[in-house]
Amino acid sequence: MSLKLRLARHGAKKRPYYRIVVADARAPRDGRYIDRIGSYNPLLAKDDENRVIIDGEKAKAWIAKGARPTERVARFLGAMDLWDWKVGSNPEKGKPGAKALQLIKDREEKEEARKQAEADAKEAAKEAAAAAKAAEAEAAAAPAEDAPAAEEAPAEEAPSEE
Picture 1: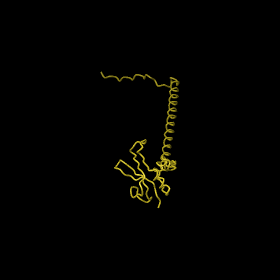
Picture 2 (picture 1 turned 90 degrees about the vertical axis):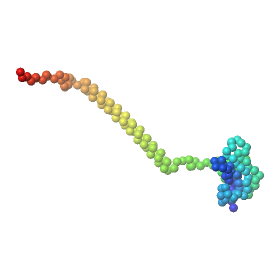
Picture 3 (picture 1 turned 60 degrees about the vertical axis):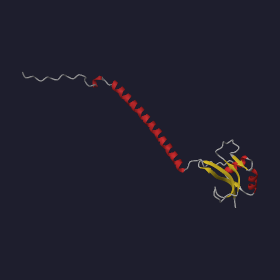
């Protein structure tokens, strides 16, 4: 029979209150337990002395008998120097999955394509402006002979019947 030092939830809805208990690992979270060794009230301020209350003698005795604390209870016992609690760090947990990585890659590719299209459009606009300027300069330099006549010859009037 493996023993656990763990939290058993009590209290009303959205008003949690936990008991720190020694229970069989196979028992339900809020079910049967062997011994109650303390309490934890997360609603109290972090510096309040009544937030975590643990009977150190009982905790030492149960640890000597082979009970293993859960992560949260190990943190409480570590604060009392009853257990050597090490910060659990899982750097893989925070990394995005394969689908998210693919979405990020697609987004970056779209952004690169958009930037490339903007650069191409700016380059085309510069070329068009340069071509228009060259055409304007060529038109101004063209001789006046080739220009169409501004005045046309007056049309002959038809004889009127008198």
